[in-house]
Length: 196
View 1 (tube, rainbow, N blue to C red):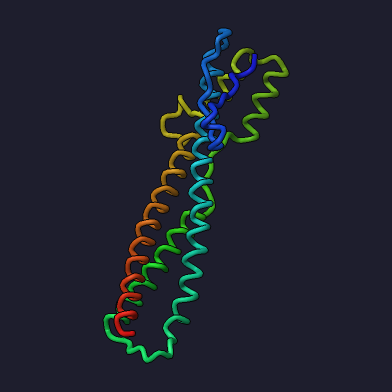
View 2: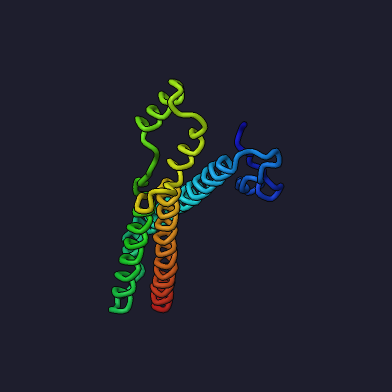
């Protein structure tokens, strides 16, 4: 028997999201439902991580461009007098932009993963082929995904959840820092226009 298939609503198809698996109506083993749900959760958190990474790349590019343009903008030959207010707000803007870039790089850091060991899976397959075990293959696969009997072990689902939440946290910090740096940049622009 196969695991229940994933279904999508029209809105989720548009957004590229998947929906949780439906309960099997043909009376399949409950273990297969756990495997399908664990796979869905893994995919969902991996998509969350991918989304944070793609947005972090865009913000990193934006901050890089602004940091590259910022010194060139200071070389105005229009008689601009660099007051202490302008200097401090420029320093604050540059610092906030650098902090935003660091947070985006943390979001892009390599992922930590946890998966069933290949050798363990091969041993289970050999036992199955040799006829030493019967009827426990599906439970072994579910255990490798969820680690339900090993309370202290980190399952792939747990690791995927923690990774997505960590990336989300750092992305949120980057967004707040970007908002603060744009505010500081606006203060610089106001001070420069005030002198013109």
